[in-house]
Image 1 (tube, rainbow, N blue to C red):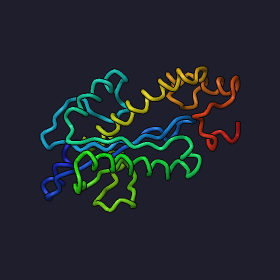
Image 2: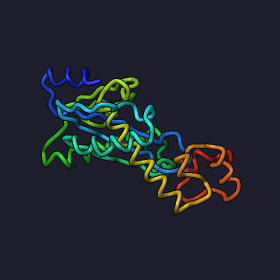
Image 3: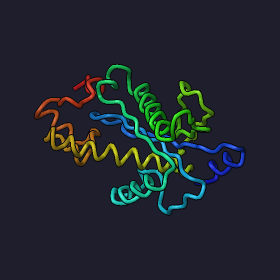
Length: 201
């Protein structure tokens, strides 16, 4: 998983970010993106596509990645933005925000040298970039970003479950499970539901 980054380092690129997002499919909550820049000697076992890991393993790796990264950043687009500009554009916005956060942490006038995205590029950013299909299982920095994004969003949805009980957000994280649909039928929609995702209900 380090090969794509190693090749870029060999070509002279230094600050290489992996970017991934979670939360495009849920009926409620934000879409969350993360950008992570890892040092060349970063070597931690177990990092993989966040969907392949247990919740316990993701939580363990979350702190390891944050502590070991050169820089990391989170970007979000909430349910209102998703309804306003659609999920694809909201996802790209979240990614841009994550990249901007990384560059703020790197320091004034410091820009990323190269950005590796999982599946899709966002051309609005004037940086060398590449989209890699299934990048979260092929590129270490993208896998690390997927873990940071996933844990961040899951924790948010657990907090939302306390604020908006009855939808089982703590279990389904906003996805359309039976318990979630039953909650909507029983209580109606709550403030963090994506209206455009629920037009037919």
